[in-house]
Image (tube, rainbow, N blue to C red; front, side, top):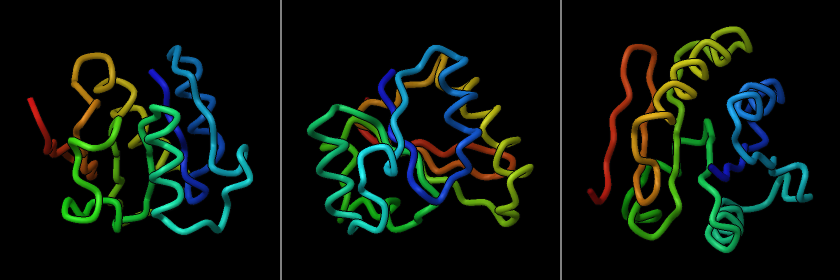
Length: 119
C-alpha cells in the first residue's frame, strides 16, 4: 500500500509501516513541510497515496470527501507523546491488513477505529 506520513508524526511510524511491507513517503521527503493541507491532499491524490496525520482538519468530509482520496487516516490521540502514537500505530498496521482504506476515512482513537466512506 502507498502511504504518505504527515510531518506531525514521528519518523518511527515510517519504519513500522515499511517493515509491514508498505511503500511510505513523508511530507518532509517531498519538501512539503509547512504546506497548506489542500496542497498535501492534492499530492496524495496525484501519487495515489493514503495520508496518515494527526491533523484533524483532514477528518472534515466536506473539505476532504473520502471517495475522492486514496484514503485518509486521522489519529485523534489525547496523548500525543511518541510512545502513545507508536502504540496506536501497531493497531493501524494490523487494521491495514484487513480493512479497506481506499476511498475511506479512518478516525483512529485509543480504543477504536471509526471508518467512513464508500463500500
